[in-house]
Amino acid sequence: MLSVSETCLTFRTEHLGRLSSSRPSGHNDARSRLELRPTPQERFLKVLVVGRKGLGKTTWISNMQAVYGSSEELAAANYQPDDAEAHAANEDAEMRNFKKDPCHMLTEMTLRDDRSLVTHHICIQDTPGYSKEVPVKHVTSYVRQQNKHFFDMEQSARRRVPVSALPDTRVDVCIFFLPAGPLRSHDMAALSAIGSLVPIVPVIAKADVLDPDELRRVRKRIAAALDMMRVNDGLNCRHSFPADDITAAGAPSSQIFTIIGGNVLEQHDGRRWPARKYTWGKCETLLPENSDVLALSRLLFELSITDLKDKTELRYLELRRRCLLVKSKRKEAEVASKLQQMEANQQENVERMAAKLQGMQELPCLADVHLPFVK
Ligand SMILES: Nc1nc2c(ncn2[C@@H]2O[C@H](COP(=O)(O)OP(=O)(O)OP(=O)(O)O)[C@@H](O)[C@H]2O)c(=O)[nH]1
Ligand SMILES: [Mg+2]
Image (cartoon, rainbow, N blue to C red):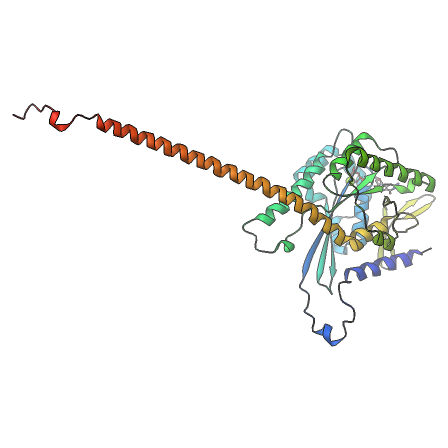
């Protein structure tokens, strides 16, 4: 069993090690000294967080910000997980604000790898929780908007940088918070609507309220519901992490993760360590015995980042093909209608000329005109 400080240390050192793994081994020999210096790169990962109201989405994001973000980013984010209840009370206003400006619910963390010169921008987009009365339309239209924004940037005639240097707005994956209780029809509708746009990683929220037996039952129930959706609707909305990554991260093989959101921040070995305190004891968010938060963050931000981006690229290529097809059809229709208009104008001109000629032929000949003053 790992102690608190051991886990903390493994987490940080492995995390940094992974990000710098692009450096080839044996870099001390003469050949590698001749190596070209890598050019600085910006990489983006966007994680969407969706779930019913009050399941702990914002709390989890604040925890991630505390663990992965820099001190300045944390100060800017104003870490106050317990303020979340006040937010929840104002559902309508939150929904309106999200539609108007989703960026106010976006948390960005910057991880720099000085060796490979890659800057990873990890963006976590929070969303207002849905309920029976409030479906997830605001979320699906957000995902579409972000794809369109990227497509417009890519197609813009004024683009001056390669596509790889564009700030990537596309959503890569959705962390779907599911309750420990039974799933309702509006949960299934939300899963299906969002799952048709982005791959979903199902998580069990507030896992601290469940004992191991209950947890097993909840996992089974969620797996069965997702399987049923695959069979009935033909929609396999789940993201499947590579088996090697699952083993390396120490994640559950079911790929249904448990989440515990900490409401206090402790310090361990100079690291921020979220925890949840009760009168009878405490629960540490990053301890693998307590939850899968550590395994999930390692998968998302370190081990599977390339796999997630590759899948986004594949989805985008298909979307791009369809958009370009629609665009070219629209252009074709525009050209056809312009041609039609030109033909109609031409026809009109011909008819006008013909009428004029006709009028000229009907003019009396000068010789036939009787001029009274001519003798
Ligand atoms: N017991 C327990 N409570 C939690 C956990 N995570 C969050 N909470 C509490 O649940 C309440 C709601 O948390 P939020 O993070 O606001 O939930 P949310 O999903 O963002 O809510 P909406 O934004 O309204 O959809 C807060 O009081 C949190 O402290 C958890 O893992 N276990
Ligand atoms: Mg929230």
